[in-house]
Length: 611
Image 1 (cartoon, rainbow, N blue to C red):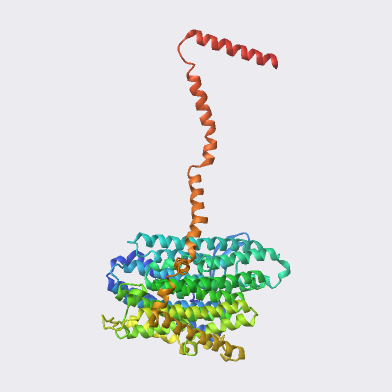
Image 2 (image 1 turned 180 degrees about the vertical axis):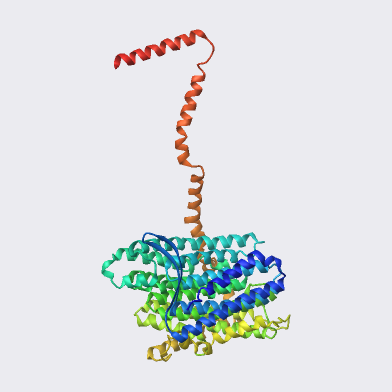
């Protein structure tokens, strides 16, 4: 297969096109070229799919050698195997649907630079495709960094607001922390294995007697730090909720198919290193569990629609990390794909609701479902899949498989907490749903006439249901067995489903039937304190500011005055001081000069006598 590189080249060339020539075209022509490039990308991908399924082989495509210095070689080679194909399918499919939706979405946004938006979006897609298809970790890191740059550009896209630039910088800097550790891991990998190729490292790992386990531990730990930075996991999760200031289609792309999924993909790709380090797997499980808890609790307290969806993403990625921690790689990847479908649906629906309500506070949106029936149906299917509603949603089967793997590995504590968080997920999700559509009077209607807006949402609704889940066994060849092939899976599915349904009833009771109960509870001082703490995301921003940002500012102030230069300047200060004192001796009196001359002559004679 000699055309895989086109999946990177097409969006990159479209980025170049929009950067240099996009301003020359009107909006209609810009939209035409944008849709043309994404259709071309999809067409090439479908051709690759046909060849991939027909042969069933792993495809390599060596393009050129980038750097070659002695034994250090960086080659630009692409790898298409089952794992990269899963990620590529999700990326291209979701990107295509979001791209189509964006064309219709931009009509409703007053401040929108078409060419700049399409340029950033295409570079984002190209860099993510490069990340996924790379056959070595150095080339993957190159795409990894461009993804971070694109997220910065897209989060701060509405640059008329200064805060947007601040939040974009925050996301960029926080993710750089993980990237530094990933870069160190890459250097250690190359030093120990003399290669950065994934398959070569895997072959060397099989002969583990040649490798010191201490080095493997550090490499795996640094890979973990790199993954949690991109995937917004505890403790580097604080950037994602603030990243919601960007255009909502961008949020949909980041949360469903691109940046957030990169960490899960990295760990799955390097799973042979993590298998050899049980302690790192324990850290993975702990980080995933803490992230699930933090995401659920913060989502319960949040009022902003997009922030609630952001916290739900943090929580769902936590489930994937927990699955990776118990070595259930397939379960994590399947849930990643399913999550990408229903999370894209939720964000695209939220984009339409926010635009026409001109508000994203769930307590103030107050939409009548009769006027927005299509959005109502889309949103409820997204919510049901998010809470893993039993039988009818795809999210039920993927999350139930993760929970089963956790239980099967004997992690009862992790299983119990993650099952409880399923209940919390159901509460905050339907709190959001009931408050948004809690309006009975007829008001303004939301016309959705554009096929480019309807088509992506219809496809995502189907993919969020059991109908969409049926296609996964054929595509990924993972769920070839019966869904409830084990008795424990059937019991677990019933328990998980009952908790989801119970959460819906709790949300309806607290925010619709008996609103006074919450008001009574908030009269207690400690409850208000805890709510404020949850609303402020456990004050993680303040903790980071106090322990890291303030310390950095103090160090930068010290370095700003350059203490080393001050030490070097002491000689200059001393000579200036001596010079000023000597100048005082110049007073034009002859007797003073004669006295100094005699005094100096006597000093020289005394020194000579001692010698």
